[in-house]
Image (cartoon, rainbow, N blue to C red; front, side, top):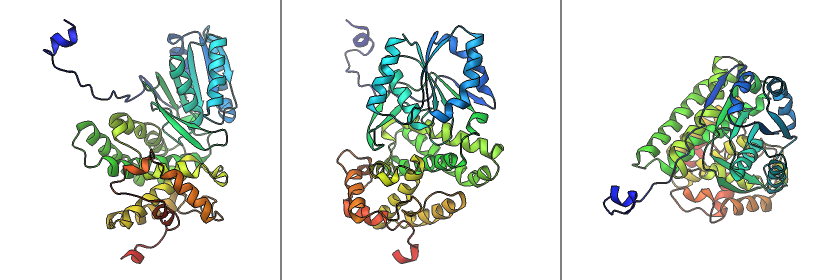
Length: 378
């Protein structure tokens, strides 16, 4: 008799989906990247550094110090600007050729997603170093894959969060302020999507995730304007933590059932427009929140109308896009919008986590009316 059977008296075991909640260890603070040499040796002696071009300059001094104080040997995959199947294959080739034992990822969301997927496929530990506050990718057990042209392709759920995450405020402060604003847009979407997809759940972990999303929203509404006005200050650090860390907690605790909804579906559709390549992930997601709220308004939800007006004021204060013009898409054609809507409404799209049916023409109507006054609907 197996242990499983004897312990459960013959009952069938029905496990719940596993949760990858958080990095095994989180280092935070100004200058903490200098402590890398104390932590890396336990993961191995051959490290592959996957980094963006700009971000390499931010981490190079710390890695140079590691080289002189430890026996770790580095290989490099630099100037990474995408998370694509081609770059994944190239990176795995380096892993095999150089007998890599640990992955070090430094950069923004796409660099981090690529590195996490490399580590997952190779079965290696990974250290993530976010160099912007634009996403929570350094925290999560998820990688989004894009085509070479930058269009969203598919995502991969990973078996665990990173083994070590290093949030160095001095490193993040070197990033353009626009990246923090975009991170606020991406993070605040957690509430507007989770409350719709999972707000009525009676499951403890999902309830906890939804409530954390509400707390996250409140922190961002209260502190973002000050954070942007005073880079490096107390409010700035709290907003960085909210965007990079707390946003990741919500997906970890809630799991796949605490889902993204229309805001990210709109983002995914917009990535297929070549005119949208210059906009950041969080900027498209922030616009997508307004689109989602319009869809809710179409279904008679006046609370959504009030929430949209609140967000429009907030967006104006911190510089998030309120409409297609703000995204640089003022000249987009109806045919192109219909293409975006068709992609966002594909059968496996997150948009179908809305509690009502949605069709493409509704979505187009919502996309062109994100700033319409509430009075028009009353």
